[in-house]
Image (cartoon, rainbow, N blue to C red; front, side, top):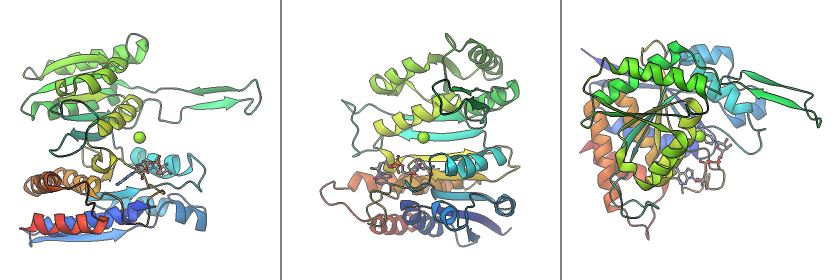
Length: 347
Ligand code: NAI
Ligand code: MG
């Protein structure tokens, strides 16, 4: 049987262009010869918006839908008003393609810097709900711009949406050696959504007797991310809490240059999208200073999602080996890191 991957590529803005080129290099290198890789590049992001005023036209959304997966660099530039590209492009893609699992693994690789004392053993994954919570745009403002302005931003939580993401998190926990799942919410204050999350979490848990469960309020979770990160294995949480927690997770595990993510539609009805957690880094764009490792680890998540487990593991092991040899006093360029990893995954 001949195998193939039909990939949509959205390099986007700033360093997005630079790191995606390295991600593709490593992808081409790791794939066995019998796997046919086809890529189609999409011109979306700040430059496109300046040129045409468009963020994500319907025709392109339809075209993106036909691919097996999407690899995205980063979107955004200080010259575009805040919210235009986030809502009109990134969030639009996540909602249109029902990316209800936002997956963010956090692992402290050997020889990487962490601000935490004592180098704790960190290896956990956050399953962040991706289509509900306070990010649905359910709100508005009255008397805008006056001293009497009123603004609402309503958190939307459906039993359907919570159950499917909780179930996905149990599946992931059940497949890992430690089999531990922690729900993070704030059900002592956000009692309506919080209790629904906890009730569904407990009920679905009856189907996974092997998985040990825990519950933390989000404020307590931020303490444990710093003081005791080794206590976590899989974490499931709401869209906003997950956004904040995963930035903290990236900060304690070697920084933003290493943090990978997947916006996943587990049913396979729509293409899933893989991207580094970082943004377009306009401060270093075009200088060859961006670390492409986060994008390359996102390619590993992409391969795992498409069923190429051996290739995903090979990329992760190669990254670990490369990091172990990195010398902070001799930084390499974006290209040099990509080349080194591409050579190494092939052998
Ligand atoms: P950022 O992640 O782009 O940069 C934060 C800091 O980390 C900067 O000092 C940058 O130089 C550094 N950095 C980021 N990635 C790096 C890498 N691979 N290697 C080395 N250093 C790296 O976040 P910032 O500055 O808040 O946002 C810049 C733009 O990116 C904004 O327009 C923002 O909206 C957008 N953004 C887009 C995201 C996406 O496309 N998913 C996510 C986050 C921000
Ligand atoms: Mg964020």
